[in-house]
Length: 508
Image (tube, rainbow, N blue to C red; front, side, top):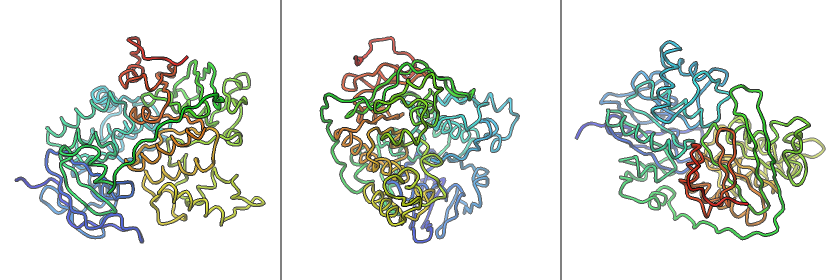
């Protein structure tokens, strides 16, 4: 038996009263792809930060290639051959893609630009090297992070939800790349909530629950149901069936909308038409960067239309094209953005104050002042209903794990009881148990008569949730396709613009 490349013994890390990791033992073999499984808040991200030098353990030891390892910073980790792609990105928004990568990877700008383009082509991670990061979608930013890591030629690559924003066609290509890296001597730590992916790509797995290791397994010897039960400690609930709706009113309608954003790097939208009725879930599929962000901004009211186009967007029967976000919310609209930190929540503010951002009309203000008791009660109810793992309502939003913050934001918006709910990437970075709970809740709301629009890059999620699906490709939206008569391959062809063959049934 050869010695492991990385060995952790008795690793513990606490933040005040929160014990994120407790006595963690973990070995990562040379030339292996090792999964770390656990619910949101189980301690996975903290453990990866300890390995990458972002944080230092309170107790325990780390051995790297047979030698004791004490990392003071990520830069030192990279020098040792450890690279990481974070779930929450570490990019400077005012710099271009290549300028961000030059902060870590030495070289001439022209040479790095060509290397970025080549890696994008080879690994299905296409991104414009000269685009400023602030103009990129969440999916495109994820690609930048992965490319930057690959360019450091690591011996250990840590991937936190690497496929969450990739289309199915690119996931297979990425997995081929990871296998080539493994066969070439690179070890990989792989965090994902997509259990079938773990079974497909990983040869070992460590399970965390409540900050402790509860088992080491070979994921290839277990099906996804077994992995879910091992991870969350209980069986998954059955999916909820749809309730047939008739005579449904239109809650959102977009009619032949053309829009060219001022940002030269943004995607122009052409001929966008869609309708969402009461008691219906409409899904928008597509590869990240094909106009999802631009469409979301137009629907949410972050981008308003000129007066001559005000009748292109209707909500609850009213022209809203020139109305801002607040005015649309007053009509019964609620929105969960894809970027939870910065748009869905303010990281430095408590959960109570984050509740006030959108829930203040629910009696949380009195005479223009915050009613602290009601705001705290609302927040506690959101925490309880949506199983947000947090010490309490005064916890800063940025201190929560990504999945727990997502549960809080989704819960906050649902508690507004909107007529029309728009959710972008509803379960991005959320563990399998919490993702199931969110999806069941959305289906229940649809069955109660709510109109729901979902943008997601996970086809499995769209097929589970939606009555019909439209595909966004290069700023153009396909006709609506009935989910029950459509195959993932049909959606995939639309996603890459190759949809001329045998089309599925299109809704009239």
